[in-house]
Length: 369
Image 1 (tube, helix red, strand yellow):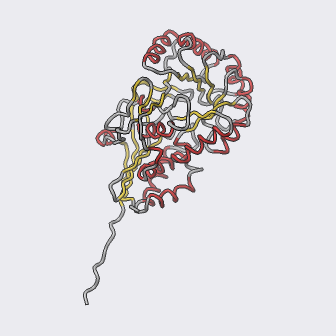
Image 2: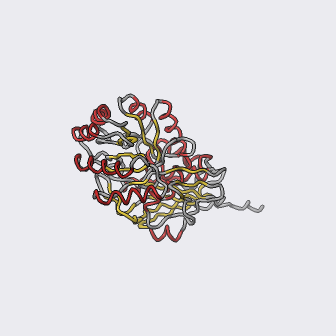
Image 3: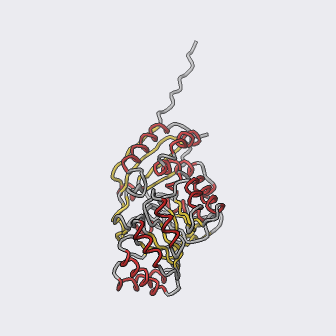
C-alpha cells in the first residue's frame, strides 16, 4: 500500500463574478482552504472547503491550524492510516476534516467518484436582484438558461421579503420552483409572520428561518409555515437528522460534504434522511469546482431534486483545466472527463501555502565482512 509523499495546504482568494448576498453578509470572493495530497505511486487527491463565519462554529484560522497540523502528522503514512487518524476529529472539526478526508478518498479511488456513464445533475440558481423592477429580466434569463429551480434569499425585512417573493412568483408564472432561504436571518416572531403570510404557489420549501442552535424557534416557524421548512445550518449528523424528523412542518434536510467530514459519511447521511421520512437536499453554493464536482457525483444516486452545488458558477476563474461540464442548468458527469486542477490558476489564487514532504527512507548497505 503506497504511502503519502506530500501534502500541500493552501488558502485561496477567488473573486466572484457577482456579489453573493445572504442575510448576514455579502460574499465578494470565496476564501477556501485547499489540500493537495500525493502518494508515492503518483496519485493525487484534492479537498477544499470555505469555512464561513456564522454558518459553523469552526473558524478559518482554526481550520488552517488543523489542516497544517494534521498534514505534518499524516505525511508518510498510508491513506488508510491517515483516514483512521482523522476519524476521531470529525465531530468537532467536520469542515476541516472534510478537506483532508476527501483528498484521501480521492486517492483511494472512492467508487462514489467513479463515473461510468453520462448523467446530468440539475442545479438551482439564485435570483440576486433586490430591486423589484430588476427581478423580471433575471428570472427570464435564468429560465432561458435551463434552470427550473430558483433560490431566493430572504431574512432581511419581512414586508420587503414578502413583496420580493410575490414579484418573483409573478415573474416565474409556474415555470420554475422556488426555494426560500433565510440563512438564520429572522428572529422567531418575524420568521413566523413571514412563513404564515407566504402564498405557497410554486414554493418548494423555506430554509433555516432562525439561528442554527434555536431549535424551538425553528420548530415554531415550521408549525405555522404555509410551505415545508428545511433545516441546514442546524444539521451536522445523524442525530440532528433524526431530531428534525420529529418536528411538525419540517419536510426537508440539507447536507453538505463539508459538514459530514467525507464522501462515505455524506452518502450515509443522505440515506438516513430518506429513512426517517424527510427529503434530502444536497449542495454547497459557497465552494469551488472541487467540492461541486464531488457533491454532484454523490447526488447522482442520493437525491431527486435540484442540487445546490453551484459555487463554481459564481467564480471568475475556475480551478479545473477543463471546466466542469455544464449545460442547460445541469452539471454533466461524463466518463471521459477528468478533474485535473489547473496549477497556474491555483498558484495565482494562493494567498498562503505550507508544504509537508515525507522524509526519504534511508537504506543502509550490509556491512562487508
